[in-house]
Image (cartoon, rainbow over all chains, first blue to last red):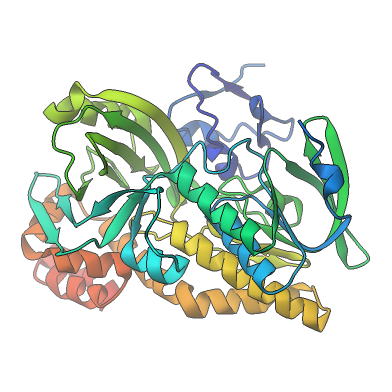
Length: 57
Length: 402
């Protein structure tokens, strides 16, 4: 799963465009990550502002 | 807020999702062709927040978008460009008159949306479309605005919902971008800069903006968009960190003010060759309709929207909304724009493998007009190939172009 640093996130939705399994969604309240996430880190590596990280379960 | 949804028809010919330039281009053309069309935008304000450097070339504006560059959305005429190689060597392109414009996207996008409305489209902001399901050759969609919701049936959906393109994915086309195919972008709109002028500036280099470039696009009165696009695997830090390093290194910028911060993804890896499915046409960023060298996509999106509308109109006449019929959109795009963009992509793929030393060396051989040719995918391929042949180490690359 993905953790979003809401202080850094600009809600641009770019990460949604790199998610191969459509686990991310840009909602009115920011980026939401669903259970489909495989922790592939594409979005973490992409994020222009470094707002994403992998959540430790 | 008034209940905007209850006034909408239950059934339309085309539902356009996303009212950026691609959606507005589609909605306007649909209306002109006499189709019943609704255009929805999930954000509360069309055109904001921008994810864009806001520059549009003359060709893009007058031919692909097809509008007169007049109105309050024009904030700066562009009279030329300066491109900086990694070592600071600059190549200048000068024009006598405006060869492009910097626009205010939130004004410009609303202008395009209002042109669509004027033509007869119903445009509605702060409305989200979801739950797409095909039934009896049509698509049922749930529109939500605040607490209101409404079900609408449409024969065709035009997905113009940007790089995140939820619609296409829900309807069966996975539009996701692999990391080397998408630029991570960040931009500061800055104010209080001395001498913004009328030239757009581009800065290249693997330490400055790996896999992309930094831009300074003037907006008049000491205001400019200062932004960056970079790509993995070349980038070692975040786009924001590269941009901050650049701003700090520039005397004219480091003490300037920041009046807006934006980020976004730019799909530069080449457009979707399969941008249609049953009842579905994908346009703009969602279909990766972007110039792979400079990352601009407003004219591409608008043009794709127009082509999508024309295909939709033909489909209505033929009463055929199948993927097989809609394929003519892919062909039209390819014929009118795609072939050219493929050439530009090929050129980019050669440039991106070059080291900073190679780029510095190359800059000595290039003139401004060559760069313009490169970005347009004209005769640039052969010219660049011939130059690269001069350096033994680059001959292999040159062969890809010749």
